[in-house]
Length: 455
Image (cartoon, rainbow, N blue to C red; front, side, top):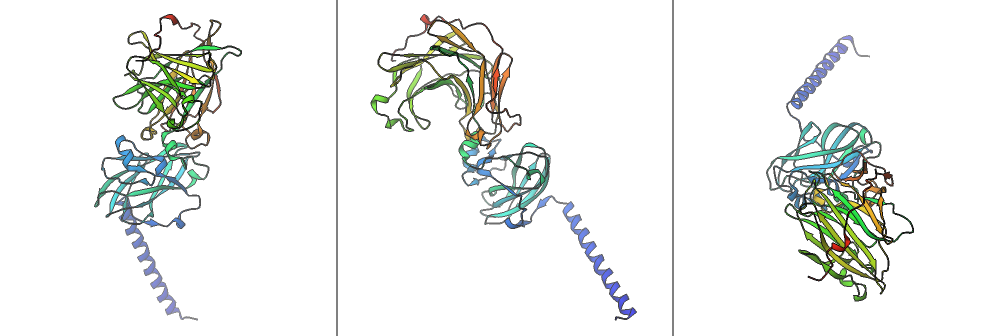
């Protein structure tokens, strides 16, 4: 048993060591308080088993520089990231609020770089100096239930690029219940969900004409949007925002021969042009079925209401003629777009619907909306019938819950649809809606419409 003097000596040593540890710890805390820079590298194994890997390839956008998306967001994730001003956001949805810790699977290609990582109003700076992919810790945040995003921006770099980042790794109570994000089909995931309205039509009636109206509110005319008004069994007809300088009226008819390449269609199955309006371009399309396509470049305006009129009439030779007209309020005139003859088909118009889709991956983070105002069909017995009932549906991207930012419904006497932008008000797929009837049939003198002819 040690003597009393030895015990006293040991206690003094323990006190000195303890004080040294406390002082060292305080110095570390003071040092950390001066800087928000996170420098620690973690291994995949050290991340909690509840970790969620959000692939940047399918969930990220350069939100302030659309032209940078093609070069910065690729199949390998964030790469070729050079611009100091680029703001990159990676989106995900949580089903609960709470704490969340973030790590990046990242590397640099040349030398050290420093980036800023933010969620909401909280930002942390992170140093990256590893030339092989490594899990780099960012730190803790608090998130709310619903859609959130991790925002990154470059601060300094010694090489040409800031960093390559393949995954944003989430940990913590906010992702213990199922989070939502794009984990496959990145192309369609970045385009966002497409939504549709499928109209109830009179039974046992043959529909010769189909009428609809669209109003795109100001600010909702987003690049890459297709506001389709008159969808039918064999094609579709609507308006698009194709670029900063070009907008189109588009009318297409599918061939009965199923292929993605129009060059594979046998002659007897080809869509034939019967006529087109002034300034209309016609040709073929593929990659979503194939057939005949027409479009007119026209600078339609957000806030204006445009009218669509489609005729479908079978001929005597097991063929059907489809003809599209577009009404411009700017000159109060109906304009012929095109008339196509579809072979191996004998029917009047069937299966009426509208849709809203985004066809550009670089604008999938921006929401857009349109109002579908006034649907009518004119049957072969000479009667107009108003369509006031519709079912709201969505595509596979929505149905498999890769993207949850879609909505549709009724505003008074109009239907509406909205998609993209990572908003939280989701409409249940297959919901049915009834709008208020307008009660006033379209006033159209069919005899005065332009007769199709080849131009």
